[in-house]
Image (tube, rainbow, N blue to C red; front, top):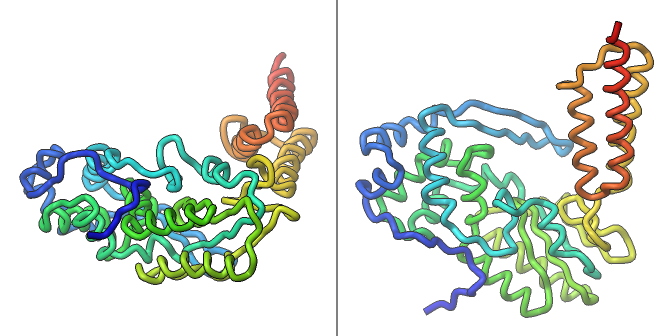
Length: 323
Protein backbone atom coordinates (compact mmCIF):
# COMPACT_ATOMS: atom_id res chain seq x y z
CA UNK A 1 0.00 0.00 0.00
CA UNK A 2 1.39 3.42 -1.00
CA UNK A 3 2.14 5.83 1.82
CA UNK A 4 0.18 9.07 1.53
CA UNK A 5 1.74 12.06 3.35
CA UNK A 6 -0.36 13.54 6.14
CA UNK A 7 -0.07 17.03 4.64
CA UNK A 8 -2.46 16.24 1.80
CA UNK A 9 -5.76 17.78 0.75
CA UNK A 10 -8.73 15.73 1.91
CA UNK A 11 -12.50 15.74 1.52
CA UNK A 12 -14.35 15.74 4.83
CA UNK A 13 -17.85 14.74 3.74
CA UNK A 14 -19.59 11.55 2.69
CA UNK A 15 -18.79 10.23 -0.79
CA UNK A 16 -21.47 10.70 -3.46
CA UNK A 17 -21.93 7.29 -5.03
CA UNK A 18 -24.86 7.75 -7.42
CA UNK A 19 -26.76 10.38 -9.40
CA UNK A 20 -29.70 10.44 -6.99
CA UNK A 21 -27.33 11.40 -4.17
CA UNK A 22 -25.73 14.06 -6.38
CA UNK A 23 -29.15 15.51 -7.20
CA UNK A 24 -29.91 15.74 -3.48
CA UNK A 25 -26.50 17.23 -2.62
CA UNK A 26 -26.84 19.95 -5.27
CA UNK A 27 -30.59 20.48 -4.73
CA UNK A 28 -31.08 20.11 -8.49
CA UNK A 29 -33.27 17.61 -10.31
CA UNK A 30 -31.71 14.71 -12.17
CA UNK A 31 -33.26 15.86 -15.43
CA UNK A 32 -31.73 19.33 -15.09
CA UNK A 33 -28.30 17.98 -14.15
CA UNK A 34 -28.25 15.67 -17.16
CA UNK A 35 -29.54 18.40 -19.46
CA UNK A 36 -26.93 20.91 -18.27
CA UNK A 37 -24.18 18.32 -18.56
CA UNK A 38 -25.08 17.71 -22.21
CA UNK A 39 -25.19 21.45 -23.03
CA UNK A 40 -22.39 22.71 -20.79
CA UNK A 41 -19.84 23.36 -23.57
CA UNK A 42 -22.14 25.95 -25.14
CA UNK A 43 -23.08 27.67 -21.88
CA UNK A 44 -20.11 30.02 -21.45
CA UNK A 45 -19.34 33.56 -22.52
CA UNK A 46 -15.85 34.90 -23.07
CA UNK A 47 -15.27 37.27 -20.13
CA UNK A 48 -11.84 38.55 -21.15
CA UNK A 49 -9.00 37.89 -23.56
CA UNK A 50 -5.46 39.12 -22.92
CA UNK A 51 -2.45 38.72 -25.20
CA UNK A 52 0.67 38.44 -23.06
CA UNK A 53 4.12 39.82 -24.01
CA UNK A 54 5.25 36.31 -25.00
CA UNK A 55 2.40 36.09 -27.54
CA UNK A 56 0.27 33.65 -25.56
CA UNK A 57 -3.39 34.45 -24.99
CA UNK A 58 -5.15 34.17 -21.63
CA UNK A 59 -8.92 33.82 -21.85
CA UNK A 60 -11.33 33.79 -18.95
CA UNK A 61 -14.85 32.39 -19.11
CA UNK A 62 -18.09 32.96 -17.26
CA UNK A 63 -20.90 30.40 -17.26
CA UNK A 64 -24.44 31.39 -18.15
CA UNK A 65 -27.33 30.59 -15.86
CA UNK A 66 -28.51 28.02 -14.92
CA UNK A 67 -25.10 26.29 -15.27
CA UNK A 68 -23.57 29.03 -13.13
CA UNK A 69 -26.09 28.32 -10.38
CA UNK A 70 -25.19 24.62 -10.39
CA UNK A 71 -21.47 25.42 -10.33
CA UNK A 72 -22.11 27.65 -7.34
CA UNK A 73 -23.85 24.73 -5.65
CA UNK A 74 -20.95 22.39 -6.51
CA UNK A 75 -18.57 24.83 -4.88
CA UNK A 76 -20.67 25.37 -1.75
CA UNK A 77 -21.76 21.77 -1.20
CA UNK A 78 -18.69 19.87 -2.35
CA UNK A 79 -15.54 21.91 -3.03
CA UNK A 80 -15.81 24.07 0.08
CA UNK A 81 -15.61 20.87 2.11
CA UNK A 82 -12.07 20.12 1.01
CA UNK A 83 -9.36 20.86 3.56
CA UNK A 84 -6.28 22.14 1.77
CA UNK A 85 -2.69 22.03 3.07
CA UNK A 86 -0.84 25.28 3.80
CA UNK A 87 1.36 25.02 0.69
CA UNK A 88 -1.69 25.56 -1.57
CA UNK A 89 -2.68 29.24 -1.47
CA UNK A 90 -4.54 30.04 -4.69
CA UNK A 91 -8.12 31.36 -4.51
CA UNK A 92 -8.75 29.86 -1.07
CA UNK A 93 -10.43 31.60 1.86
CA UNK A 94 -7.82 33.26 4.07
CA UNK A 95 -5.11 32.77 1.44
CA UNK A 96 -3.76 34.96 -1.33
CA UNK A 97 -0.51 35.78 -3.07
CA UNK A 98 0.72 37.65 0.04
CA UNK A 99 0.21 34.55 2.19
CA UNK A 100 2.00 32.52 -0.46
CA UNK A 101 5.00 34.87 -0.45
CA UNK A 102 5.13 34.96 3.35
CA UNK A 103 5.92 31.22 3.42
CA UNK A 104 9.33 32.01 1.93
CA UNK A 105 10.40 35.00 4.04
CA UNK A 106 14.01 34.84 5.17
CA UNK A 107 15.13 32.37 2.52
CA UNK A 108 18.68 32.33 1.21
CA UNK A 109 17.58 31.10 -2.21
CA UNK A 110 14.28 30.95 -4.10
CA UNK A 111 13.49 28.89 -7.20
CA UNK A 112 10.41 30.03 -9.14
CA UNK A 113 8.63 28.01 -11.79
CA UNK A 114 5.49 28.70 -13.82
CA UNK A 115 3.15 26.27 -15.57
CA UNK A 116 2.43 26.94 -19.24
CA UNK A 117 -1.27 27.45 -20.07
CA UNK A 118 -2.24 25.86 -16.77
CA UNK A 119 -6.05 26.00 -17.05
CA UNK A 120 -6.32 24.92 -20.72
CA UNK A 121 -3.79 22.16 -19.98
CA UNK A 122 -5.99 20.84 -17.17
CA UNK A 123 -7.93 18.39 -19.29
CA UNK A 124 -11.29 16.77 -18.70
CA UNK A 125 -9.36 13.54 -17.99
CA UNK A 126 -7.51 15.23 -15.12
CA UNK A 127 -10.74 16.73 -13.77
CA UNK A 128 -12.54 13.38 -13.95
CA UNK A 129 -9.66 11.77 -12.08
CA UNK A 130 -10.17 14.34 -9.32
CA UNK A 131 -13.88 13.62 -9.03
CA UNK A 132 -13.46 9.84 -9.29
CA UNK A 133 -10.29 9.16 -7.32
CA UNK A 134 -9.69 12.12 -5.01
CA UNK A 135 -13.32 12.57 -3.98
CA UNK A 136 -14.10 8.87 -4.47
CA UNK A 137 -17.41 9.59 -6.21
CA UNK A 138 -19.23 7.04 -8.35
CA UNK A 139 -18.29 6.73 -12.02
CA UNK A 140 -21.50 8.27 -13.36
CA UNK A 141 -21.31 11.08 -10.79
CA UNK A 142 -17.71 11.84 -11.74
CA UNK A 143 -18.59 11.94 -15.43
CA UNK A 144 -21.50 14.30 -14.85
CA UNK A 145 -19.49 16.64 -12.60
CA UNK A 146 -16.68 16.69 -15.15
CA UNK A 147 -19.03 17.86 -17.88
CA UNK A 148 -20.51 20.48 -15.53
CA UNK A 149 -17.09 21.92 -14.65
CA UNK A 150 -15.17 21.75 -17.95
CA UNK A 151 -15.56 23.48 -21.29
CA UNK A 152 -14.57 21.72 -24.49
CA UNK A 153 -12.48 19.18 -22.58
CA UNK A 154 -10.58 21.86 -20.63
CA UNK A 155 -10.83 23.57 -17.25
CA UNK A 156 -12.23 27.05 -18.01
CA UNK A 157 -10.31 29.80 -16.24
CA UNK A 158 -12.72 32.14 -14.47
CA UNK A 159 -15.49 29.62 -13.79
CA UNK A 160 -16.67 29.42 -10.17
CA UNK A 161 -15.37 25.87 -9.66
CA UNK A 162 -12.13 26.07 -11.64
CA UNK A 163 -9.69 27.48 -9.09
CA UNK A 164 -10.66 24.81 -6.55
CA UNK A 165 -10.17 22.02 -9.07
CA UNK A 166 -6.87 23.61 -10.15
CA UNK A 167 -5.63 23.26 -6.58
CA UNK A 168 -6.33 19.52 -6.80
CA UNK A 169 -4.68 18.90 -10.18
CA UNK A 170 -1.70 17.19 -8.51
CA UNK A 171 -3.64 15.82 -5.55
CA UNK A 172 -1.73 12.54 -5.44
CA UNK A 173 1.83 13.57 -6.39
CA UNK A 174 2.08 17.04 -4.87
CA UNK A 175 1.95 15.94 -1.21
CA UNK A 176 4.75 13.44 -1.95
CA UNK A 177 6.84 16.15 -3.63
CA UNK A 178 6.24 18.61 -0.81
CA UNK A 179 7.12 16.03 1.85
CA UNK A 180 10.29 15.05 -0.01
CA UNK A 181 11.42 18.67 -0.29
CA UNK A 182 10.52 19.39 3.34
CA UNK A 183 12.68 16.43 4.44
CA UNK A 184 15.58 18.23 2.74
CA UNK A 185 14.84 21.47 4.59
CA UNK A 186 13.08 23.10 1.63
CA UNK A 187 9.78 24.98 1.52
CA UNK A 188 7.37 24.32 -1.35
CA UNK A 189 4.27 26.31 -2.28
CA UNK A 190 1.96 26.68 -5.25
CA UNK A 191 -0.23 29.67 -6.01
CA UNK A 192 -2.41 28.41 -8.90
CA UNK A 193 0.27 28.07 -11.65
CA UNK A 194 3.17 29.68 -9.76
CA UNK A 195 5.46 27.23 -7.96
CA UNK A 196 8.11 28.37 -5.51
CA UNK A 197 10.75 26.37 -3.64
CA UNK A 198 13.01 28.08 -1.12
CA UNK A 199 15.75 27.24 1.34
CA UNK A 200 17.26 29.00 4.34
CA UNK A 201 20.52 27.25 3.54
CA UNK A 202 22.89 27.47 0.59
CA UNK A 203 22.16 25.07 -2.29
CA UNK A 204 24.90 23.98 -4.66
CA UNK A 205 24.26 23.47 -8.37
CA UNK A 206 23.59 19.77 -7.91
CA UNK A 207 20.95 20.41 -5.23
CA UNK A 208 19.27 23.11 -7.34
CA UNK A 209 19.16 20.80 -10.35
CA UNK A 210 17.63 18.04 -8.22
CA UNK A 211 14.86 20.36 -6.99
CA UNK A 212 14.02 21.52 -10.51
CA UNK A 213 14.01 17.94 -11.79
CA UNK A 214 11.54 16.91 -9.07
CA UNK A 215 9.16 19.78 -9.89
CA UNK A 216 9.40 19.23 -13.65
CA UNK A 217 8.89 15.51 -13.16
CA UNK A 218 5.57 16.11 -11.44
CA UNK A 219 4.44 18.47 -14.20
CA UNK A 220 5.45 16.16 -17.04
CA UNK A 221 3.73 13.14 -15.47
CA UNK A 222 0.44 15.03 -15.57
CA UNK A 223 0.85 16.42 -19.07
CA UNK A 224 1.88 19.96 -18.10
CA UNK A 225 4.89 21.96 -19.30
CA UNK A 226 6.98 24.44 -17.33
CA UNK A 227 7.22 27.94 -18.79
CA UNK A 228 10.97 28.17 -19.33
CA UNK A 229 10.89 31.96 -19.68
CA UNK A 230 9.55 32.22 -16.11
CA UNK A 231 12.20 29.92 -14.62
CA UNK A 232 14.14 31.96 -12.06
CA UNK A 233 16.69 31.35 -9.34
CA UNK A 234 17.49 34.21 -6.95
CA UNK A 235 19.65 34.44 -3.82
CA UNK A 236 19.52 36.74 -0.80
CA UNK A 237 22.28 38.92 -2.26
CA UNK A 238 19.66 40.25 -4.71
CA UNK A 239 15.94 40.90 -4.67
CA UNK A 240 14.06 37.62 -4.30
CA UNK A 241 10.40 37.52 -5.29
CA UNK A 242 7.56 35.05 -4.91
CA UNK A 243 4.31 35.91 -6.71
CA UNK A 244 5.90 39.31 -7.47
CA UNK A 245 6.48 40.19 -3.82
CA UNK A 246 9.85 40.58 -2.17
CA UNK A 247 10.68 37.87 0.37
CA UNK A 248 14.09 39.16 1.43
CA UNK A 249 12.58 40.41 4.69
CA UNK A 250 8.80 40.73 4.50
CA UNK A 251 6.52 40.70 1.44
CA UNK A 252 6.52 44.03 -0.36
CA UNK A 253 5.90 45.62 -3.74
CA UNK A 254 8.88 46.28 -5.95
CA UNK A 255 10.29 49.80 -6.17
CA UNK A 256 9.11 50.07 -9.78
CA UNK A 257 5.53 49.08 -8.82
CA UNK A 258 5.52 51.65 -6.02
CA UNK A 259 6.79 54.25 -8.49
CA UNK A 260 3.96 53.41 -10.91
CA UNK A 261 1.38 54.01 -8.18
CA UNK A 262 2.93 57.34 -7.19
CA UNK A 263 2.97 58.35 -10.86
CA UNK A 264 -0.73 57.49 -11.21
CA UNK A 265 -1.56 59.83 -8.31
CA UNK A 266 0.61 62.55 -9.80
CA UNK A 267 -1.12 62.24 -13.20
CA UNK A 268 -4.50 62.66 -11.54
CA UNK A 269 -3.32 65.80 -9.75
CA UNK A 270 -1.95 67.27 -12.98
CA UNK A 271 -5.19 66.49 -14.82
CA UNK A 272 -7.18 68.22 -12.08
CA UNK A 273 -4.97 71.33 -12.28
CA UNK A 274 -5.49 71.43 -16.05
CA UNK A 275 -9.22 71.63 -15.42
CA UNK A 276 -10.02 68.15 -16.75
CA UNK A 277 -13.18 66.55 -15.40
CA UNK A 278 -12.48 63.76 -12.91
CA UNK A 279 -15.19 61.25 -11.99
CA UNK A 280 -14.46 60.15 -8.45
CA UNK A 281 -16.68 57.06 -8.45
CA UNK A 282 -15.12 55.37 -11.49
CA UNK A 283 -12.49 55.68 -14.19
CA UNK A 284 -8.85 56.71 -13.51
CA UNK A 285 -9.58 57.99 -9.99
CA UNK A 286 -11.18 54.72 -8.84
CA UNK A 287 -8.44 52.69 -10.51
CA UNK A 288 -5.71 54.77 -8.87
CA UNK A 289 -7.40 54.51 -5.48
CA UNK A 290 -7.45 50.73 -5.89
CA UNK A 291 -3.70 50.75 -6.56
CA UNK A 292 -3.12 52.87 -3.45
CA UNK A 293 -5.16 50.38 -1.40
CA UNK A 294 -2.90 47.62 -2.76
CA UNK A 295 0.15 49.64 -1.67
CA UNK A 296 -1.42 50.01 1.78
CA UNK A 297 -1.39 46.23 2.29
CA UNK A 298 2.38 46.18 2.18
CA UNK A 299 3.53 49.76 2.81
CA UNK A 300 0.83 51.51 4.88
CA UNK A 301 2.95 54.58 5.69
CA UNK A 302 3.69 55.35 2.04
CA UNK A 303 0.09 54.65 1.06
CA UNK A 304 -1.36 57.01 3.65
CA UNK A 305 0.41 60.00 2.10
CA UNK A 306 -1.03 59.13 -1.30
CA UNK A 307 -4.51 58.66 0.19
CA UNK A 308 -4.29 62.14 1.67
CA UNK A 309 -3.46 63.57 -1.75
CA UNK A 310 -6.43 61.78 -3.31
CA UNK A 311 -8.75 62.98 -0.54
CA UNK A 312 -7.51 66.52 -1.11
CA UNK A 313 -8.55 66.30 -4.77
CA UNK A 314 -12.10 65.34 -3.78
CA UNK A 315 -12.22 68.12 -1.22
CA UNK A 316 -11.09 70.73 -3.76
CA UNK A 317 -13.66 69.46 -6.25
CA UNK A 318 -16.46 69.91 -3.69
CA UNK A 319 -15.22 73.42 -2.89
CA UNK A 320 -15.18 74.33 -6.59
CA UNK A 321 -18.79 73.22 -6.93
CA UNK A 322 -19.97 75.37 -4.02
CA UNK A 323 -21.70 78.64 -5.12
